[in-house]
Image 1 (cartoon, helix red, strand yellow):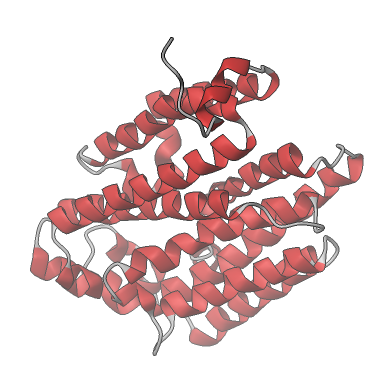
Image 2 (tube, helix red, strand yellow):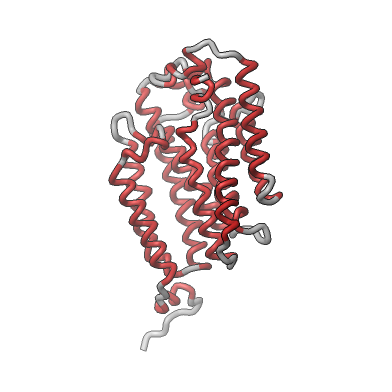
Length: 309
């Protein structure tokens, strides 16, 4: 039973805190007053997302077993190293789906739709003939869609009357693509054998360190550009935090160059104390800028040339 629990990766549930920014953006833009029922909705929504994510992890571990045997550490996963039964794995997959759907239904129909979308992305990513994880660049783009879905999940916990701005959705998606691209980069460096890397992940047959690093920087530029549009439109004061946000991308990139880097296993990032402290500072900065108005920043929205006296 321990192995069947392990392939559901409950230690990865911390990643679902990525729904929190969606909650924050909804409060900021939708003007929904805080209410006690939102706490219950958030609890149910977080559980639903964890269960659907675990369903995706279960199918991922089972279908990746033949490839994980070529990875230095993943070859020790239970599905690879132990004699696990297909019928029980599929039963576990279905039970997680059922639990996720049941938790999502009381929130609202749009939240439920997002959970179903998250589940479908797991199928497209892992199951043939789709299996987007085998296609270079599409593997990163398709998996990072889950980041945007999590933002929408957080948003729909708060309100189902409106949609969030496209700029923040694209920015959050591309931020996820950056994180995933850097994860691929760190994995490729760690394996340090292109032929072995290609056996472990088919998309690695078409990657190099240079293309992984270059594409990750492209995702970072796209993310910060979209976020800049969002900030100028909705809260100019956040522009003062943008240099610090840029450095967060740089900081994360530097971590990828460490031996056995934690970016390969994002659930272990809590061990990067400096990163956690910096993210905490950045969150605090955004909170402060939420409540402080700085009128002179209006010059960034002025469409006219400034005359010289």
